[in-house]
Length: 201
Image 1 (tube, helix red, strand yellow):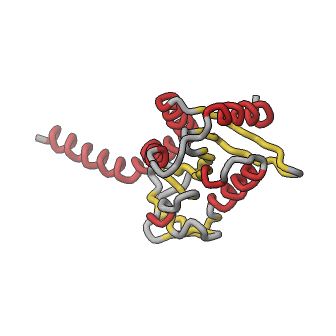
Image 2 (cartoon, helix red, strand yellow; image 1 turned 90 degrees about the horizontal axis):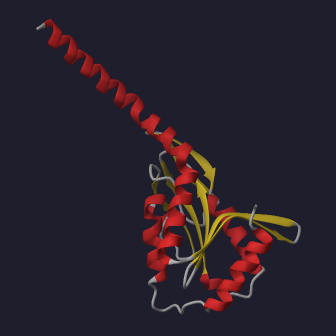
Image 3 (spheres, one colour; image 1 turned 180 degrees about the vertical axis):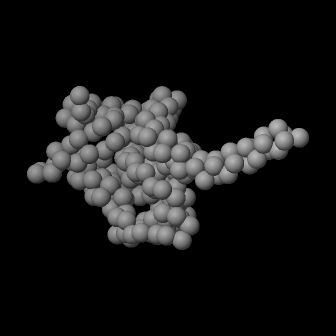
């Protein structure tokens, strides 16, 4: 009887400890592996849909150097992709300079909107090209454990997206029947030109 009581108490203690530490532990693992998981997901999309993909791009524009974690060249759109890790949630609007970052249950902080800098990079990138600006999608991938305000995910050409929704979002853009396919010859040349001057070796 005493043995079963000890086992029962031990199980209660274990459950209690898991409830306290499991989420922080899981989030620490998620943070450590986040960049690699984003790369794997983007690579999987590029391979499955036969899209061009450039990683770790650094382009000189005037006296500036602009960086992109990934540029995914779809049949209809060019996806300029960044990534950022946050704790529990983000609230605000796509165009806000700052967003509310939920740290704990009742604790928030103001953080810079990652889209502001990323959008600026995309605009500099566009200035190098003759391609229509309407074909560019600026997106920052956010970890799955971070809950995003819906207003941050709905803009057409600039948005945040949880990693788990990235492929679905790309598919949605590429299925837009009102948009024509980019000339394959021009697209291939564009990718080669960017690779020649902007991919880190």
